[in-house]
Length: 255
Length: 323
Image 1 (tube, rainbow over the protein chains, first blue to last red):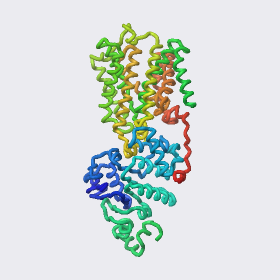
Image 2 (cartoon, chains in turn cyan, blue; image 1 turned 90 degrees about the vertical axis):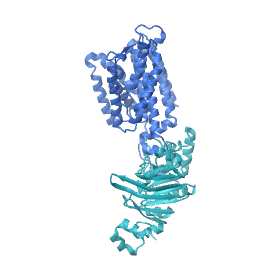
Image 3 (spheres, rainbow over the protein chains, first blue to last red; image 1 turned 120 degrees about the vertical axis):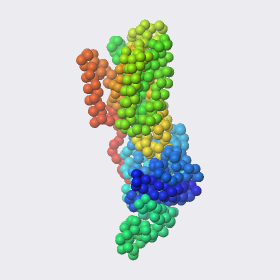
Image 4 (cartoon, helix red, strand yellow; image 1 turned 45 degrees about the horizontal axis):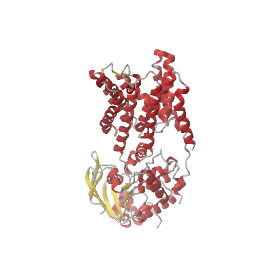
């Protein structure tokens, strides 16, 4: 088992954003976390990465209890993440942004630069290496997030809505990139709103609603689960929609 | 290549300056510019590169100044022997102050550093052993060359030039190391930097300690040149402000920014003081206030950032996806 969360609860005051969520991740998985806005998937995600401290529950990585580890310690173990709103280092070039990730595995500038260039080549951004990162638009920034995370040589990569804000063509390119990353042996956790992405990438899906896990299974299983449809569309709409395929209703691809 | 030509011109000018402009006033002015450039460059490491705007840096300046004068006044040693003591004091204090305050962001960190500096000034003002409000004096008549007490500003000028070169070399080395990259990343987004494995707290603390050590050297040199230190000249908050404005005016986070800022502001202050005499002393700070407003409004990157013109136009957004 690569990554495991046991009974994670995150409370803000009396409000439980995540209520007793558990998950296990095996080498080679692509786990999708879905749910309506405010369902708690991002909070759960941030408990895995260490950005938030869980109120209760444990997180284990390769059988080590990392619940009290800082984000930088988790990165050192091989847990990398991207941010929903890209946290680009604005004052740096694209290459330097990626070098920050590469510096995790080497203290030498030259070596970090070599590794960063290799990552940029891999994600198709080598032409932009010397460009100031602040000149990038949303698609470029999203891709740079992934490149930086890859440069830390992770075992698990957690993508937080890496495709939000991209157009259909860009989403397809991004899906190809994620597939390529997966093929290279990196295990993935993806939080995503776009159903097409989940359907075409995830091997397993976990559905959140109001802080609780309401379903899990293959993408096909969860999207035909009445509780999931009700969570997305409301109970009445779910009844009315009974005749349609759920993927279609959630804005997925045409069947 | 052009970079190296510029650098050689600046270095050549810096070496020749006190010989070309050799009046005592001009030599003293040159020495002061270098002295403040050392302090502002030291501040730049934590204020510029790490983006932690310390307004209490004078506390480290004071460590050096009091250690240098204390070495003479209390132990009869050359003020030079106070320098290592000042560094140890400053680094220790930076560690004590830095651990709880560096996690504060933005203005809160600045305010905490002001509180520390003012507290220290009040403590020293009320400590008889440190001369209280009168302060400590250095050797009035030099016993030997190691007392570093000269009538002419010329020896100070070259001493300061050497120390400034070392300070800038350390800064340059740092910016090209992993630590420098991490500091810049932390400044832009601490959260992202940490997610990529940068130990933010530790990196900032090291930068703060390094900056404190260099600032204390500047304080020691200042006290040696003026031959005394009192709570106002060694621990007054306005010294912090001066250092900060010089770095910000020239360009915080740029290697030569603080030097440029010092080269503009020190002459400005000296000239306004000598023209206006005692009456104009307060006017300098009115000018400083105006400069803060102007920098913040029009050129937050400082004057030097005008030279490093980078393209602001957006690259074609599709370009990120070129296969």
